[in-house]
Length: 378
Image (cartoon, rainbow, N blue to C red; front, side, top):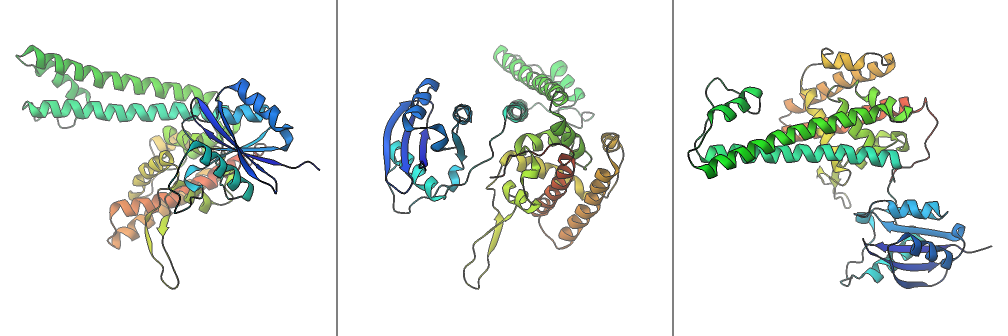
């Protein structure tokens, strides 16, 4: 029977440090190779039959290209969560070679935690959704720059302009705000142009997201539509959840999904002393952000109408029943915590954590109607 070789890779943009842990044997570094497909192919051929290799590397800025290359060569590969790699407290030396050796040794011992690797469809959708999120952040920065510029030069909107960034507000800036100095006028025009450019960019990306949803596989598209039955979960939030999580049925229980999101309480307990703190924030930050934004809507009394009623048209009654149950439970939860004088950020975090349970229930119920996915949770 051939022995399995455990290979640890410390991956960078141009180089890969390689180490091998023999099954029941030594752990040795093999040096550094260029991060090129033809070199990786030669490495696999050198180390032996692909079926006898188990390769791992840490998730990082290089993405999952190496994972796809290795799996295409028939090699079992896993991408490891960097924050969960064991570290010796007294180890003060860090090199690529030592990192590769540590990965190979820990991988052989079973001490590493793999992350979920998206397929090409999920990866493309996630990049598009994150591009839209980047555009929103850039828009906020552009608006702040323009606002602070106007504030520095004593420009205040008239009394009939009550809200910022409305059409009326932008018309006031363009038609009534002027400066005698050409330098200030040029600055104003540039800031206004940037604000308008960011708005056009967001519209363009949201249109691309809508078109991408229409071309998704049936299972993914069905989950995106079903999640919109929930209050506070419109199209962008629903597609963000699917893009960041993939197949939600890979989580055996909603509790695991809550832990993955980082919305569960941190804990430091020893002996008879139990101490819990703020949320752990150890999970997916993009998912956590949209869930917290959605949770704010449950401060209002349960109600179905307007855009929510329109989103629920055509959905199964069972999905709508779950969404209605979520409204009652989460609104009641919000009121109880508010009555206990909890701070609003704490209340919203608790409501968001329970909202993930309803998201899991709707997604799993929808996914069961389609062929099962073999992806597993981190």
